[in-house]
Length: 467
Ligand code: GLN
Image (cartoon, rainbow, N blue to C red):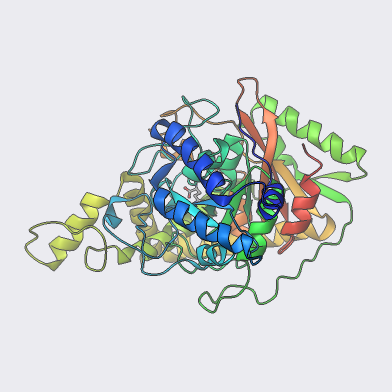
């Protein structure tokens, strides 16, 4: 079912030895895109000619002995990232016709290292969703079983890797959007520490939660890409100067009782998770069950704060500066209203209204301020667990991929699916999802590791034990 290509390090060895060429590799991916993309809907645009031209150039550089660190790495980018001279639409009609005038730092650094961008990937509108069904361009189907969703919001990015249409994807994660589709599609996905990768050129959803990270089959590919992307760029003041790991190797890992006992957790996911814990035990790890008293507060905190930030961030899409503008409005106010009414999807409208409500003068303290206070409590409690243990582990999601349409009628049911992933965004900590086998229906399951700030490389090492 899953096509698991070789790791980039092996491809690179062959490229440098002249056994393969970038042109050949890009063509191989383009062939798979022609075969699978028409029904899976993972790519919104494929840069076929352009990526072949670039492949030729990089082949020349390899011959000349000055290939970049990611020479010939075939990458797809989520439709929330800007790439100079190319459209970026955030999966939305409101950005119809918009072309990026500069590239996101994350994208530019990959290009500077000689990676090849093969296309732009489908996602939930502005990253708001858990199944990719909120895209204005239709859902992405799961390659493991096309009756099921890909997960979201980086659904196109996950399926593109899952089906071998690119080697690595760049996704974004505000509340689980890298890890959840990675789990649903049987690949690995890394949400870095908040502030490790610059958000410059990322179309903002919730600025104090948004992160950019890699998705791939191989953990080594995630590490290589993070290394190239991370660090200050002078455009995002939240990026850390130095990313020093605090890893202390106590050989102790924690799981939260409230998560493994949660009624929504699918039985075979629980079983697979505990089987993995046994493996860690056999490798000398001590496993500690801890209490996490704020489980009920995670989703309300996340949805109050992210909708508040989204309502402010999305105010810029008004028909004046970029993208869609309504025809024939009588005055400016009508133009704003009609433009936004016509071009935003239902979920985006719901969140703008919710966010505007929690920020309104009468309700600000009751919702927004309160959620900020609870955010702090969640952070403190999570850091207290990590003061004593190297990692917190859990299943990535409580169930495997839903059927298409299963959750779309009830937004609350949809939000509940984010329960295990939002903690890492509320706290800003790094979190990684790696494949944990298949459930009884043959659908992929994910194992999640959360670590201390800047411990990504230690987390990647640790999870090698899982499969
Ligand atoms: N499903 C979550 C939401 O809808 C997470 C989205 C994300 O990480 N971009 O907000």
